[in-house]
Amino acid sequence: MFSKRKEARYPGRPPLPMVRRRIPMRYHMRHQFGVRDTAFRQTMYALTGMPLAEGNRIEILKNGVAFFPSMLGAIRGAKKTINLEFYIYWDGEIGRQFAEALAERARGGVQVNVILDAVGSAPMSRDLVLFLQRNGVAVEWYHPLRWYTLSRVNHRTHRKLMIIDGEIGFSGGMGIADEWLGDADAPNHWRETVVRVEGPVVTQMQFAFMDNWVKSRGELLTGLDYFPELEKRGPHCAQVIKSSPSEGSSAVKLMYIVSIVSAQKSICISNAYFVPDRDTLRALETAVRRGVDVRVIVPGEYTDVPIVRDAARWLYERMLRRGIRIFEYQPTMMHAKTMVVDGIWSTIGSSNFDDRSFRLNDENNVNVYDEAIASQMETMFFEDLARSEEITRRRWLRRPFFNRIRESVASWFKPQL
Image 1 (cartoon, rainbow, N blue to C red):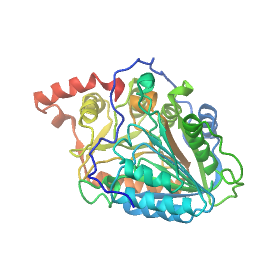
Image 2 (cartoon, helix red, strand yellow):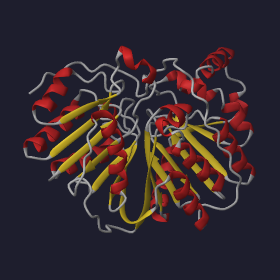
Image 3 (cartoon, rainbow, N blue to C red):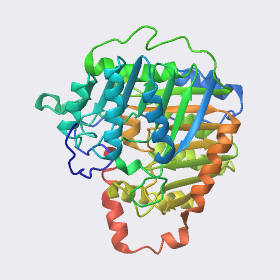
Image 4 (cartoon, rainbow, N blue to C red):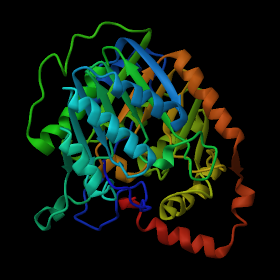
């Protein structure tokens, strides 16, 4: 149906062009209430603009062995519409499976709309794109590279969204590429977390997709095929937030700041690119001083963007000195973007813990306010912790001098990472 070509290896991150610098978004908040207080939920709603919706069914999917079959099954069961937005869609085994499933549904009368980032999905072969288009799939490229669009080359969509019939949604840190196959059982099978959602909050996921569909195609997708009346499907309370530099503020950064400042017992973070800015670093340090147990899992030896790891390591000494515990994941690339606070508040999404996600990228996260889901997320976190190596301050101070130089140089690029 289309030719298979050797897949190029591109990092799962936007490029680092040095363009017009934006003024950093500064947020500061005092600890006034806990995550379990009503004030927390009301504040999160007020600052992000999205309500916490009751009556959802949330399923946490760990690694490609779980989420790819679930996603493909949902596509094959679609009856009216499929909306898909990804930073990475590459050729390969899983890329072909998705293309064939999407094409089959489009031939069957389902309206299939796809947004791909023009940088992140640049390795996708023209044959694969033409195959989708010939079969009726509407494909749009987000901010394609043109000489007259250089001013926005650094503004990428990093969102990962798939919505089926306006009723089932998926989000997380995944891309459609063979790196996400398997069960984190080999260096080339990445560790990832994805959330599957059914219920009223899917409307918020659809809204996030529509945001960039309008920007890319100028078309409004309306009606019950996209926005059906959604009945309650489960016991979970959830919220979807979207973030974009074009909106003038970072909903993702606000979410992280409010969550961290409201923590009273524990914060468990897993993040592929953990390079906190001044505000989030101060919030984490202040949480430790309040007695909060703060643990962070980051990539170890296996990472797709070494400069980001070096920039993160430049901050290790300060974080370790302030009591933030850091663990490097050993088996493969840790690509998940999750956080659990006080055993009740969880976030799973596309946003990294860095300036690029806070200031430059379009991002989305699904937040869940539920003890059972938080317990499941914490269980996964401690399973990953058992496969990680803790960085101690004493050992860290003994690292080679050359490593310090490399980390220092990497820190210069922090505003673009």
